[in-house]
Length: 86
Image 1 (cartoon, one colour):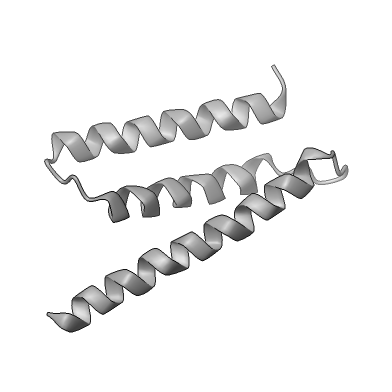
Image 2 (tube, rainbow, N blue to C red):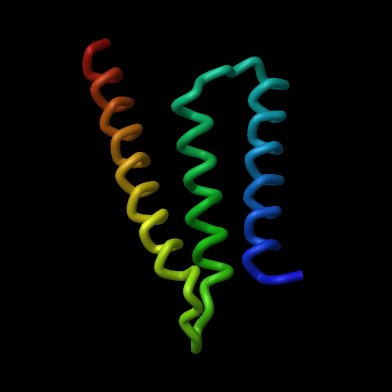
């Protein structure tokens, strides 16, 4: 099995575990799910990033990480604004 296949399977298992835990705790909050899924994505990217080679899919992975960083920042900003409003 290739490294990128293992990474995608790991991310899918992480997201399923988070959604299962959220459903068991009766906490259906989409922003919380997105935030925890993005944390899992960043961990998977960090763990599976090759040290000495640069395969072609790494460029796309860096673009995806940049987009996920923006989404994570948006979730955090929306959460802070929600806390400020009361």
